[in-house]
Length: 244
Length: 268
Image 1 (tube, rainbow over the protein chains, first blue to last red):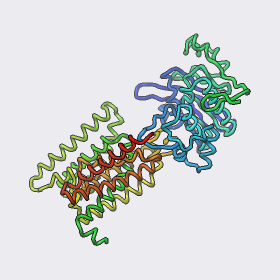
Image 2 (cartoon, each protein chain N blue to C red; image 1 turned 90 degrees about the horizontal axis):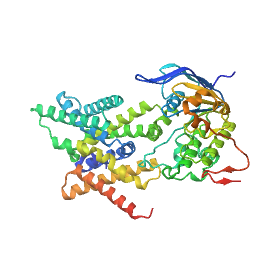
Image 3 (tube, rainbow over the protein chains, first blue to last red; image 1 turned 90 degrees about the vertical axis):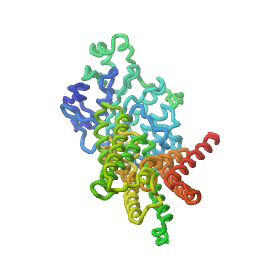
Image 4 (cartoon, chains in turn green, blue; image 1 turned 30 degrees about the horizontal axis):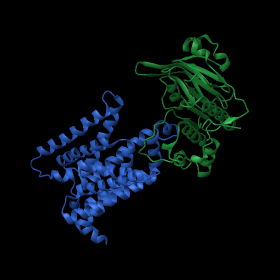
């Protein structure tokens, strides 16, 4: 077993008297794709903060392998309209030269947006710009907070497929947080079901059968967990349009 | 040329005003981007307390202004973590309390005759060679810090957590920004006074917004507009005999109105 990129050992987090997370133990190595799902208030965003090192655990340990490069795609970024910013300049702030920026934007399918203002992008375009910015750093750990939020089903599956192929290319560990049960990546190795602690974990196909999972999300909702299988007969561009 | 600037009160005032406007441009952009206008006001009001305490203890006034501003900025940073009061309430309390305490302390010192109007509205034409030296040194320091910390400051403004993940020291950067604001307020006091400092920070920056596609360009344009306002305001003051500080702010407001009207008329 190689040294994991990130590992949690009985990690817990509390704000004042409120225990947000407790007894979290799991680890991720290169190439792993982990999807965290859970209801609102389950502590998904807090888990991300622990893993990114933004919050320190109030108990247990969170370890990032020394020198790990982390790519982070935050949730719902509100940009100040008073701050003029082009997509190219936004990526430039992460470091990297013009050709690397161009390549990263091309890789996520938004090369044509380089000179566009970030304030003029659609939700799907902005997600891809954030993803391009994250891969610019050639991350060993890629963390995405609700990346598919606000996208339709086609847009979601296109985005998940892109993330999977980026994983293959960069061989990074990918942690995705989602509160949408309907589409979970088929390439997810592990689904972690979170509600303050890890209720259950397993491969996507197994987890929908898990009693803890049904209990957490209710019978009806749990049955709708759809596993997204990618069929290689067509793909989708940034607008969700089908391209052969 | 240098002799002329140093020895003539008008050109001294012009040189001081131009230097302050230049460093206020980029910092003013941060005040606009980070919605810190009220915060700037609070720091500016506390500058009067700095003058009062500096006079009471017969310390260097510039130094005491900077110290009081920094102290207030740190207190604000610590208090805002508690979140038992909304931040604008907190700012309002500290802003007006420090202004009032400053006025009370000044009032208690009867043996000093202090030109209160000069501190409140600026006394640009009274700048002496020592003041000019202070402005030059403070301005150079702020400008160097701005350039050096630019990328980090911009990142914490865009997204604090993303900045943390990318290795920026967000707490230190926020503190640095407050220190720089305190410094610029201490130097700008001579020019426009306590009550109008925030105007010199935010009006050129806001006026620059429609002209800029990148943050760097907005910062440079804000500096240029601020400097243009100093030239226009001083010229007005010279010919029509209006107070210099307020004239500079009026000129900045003129630029702001003009640019936004032109922008509103132009097809999008």
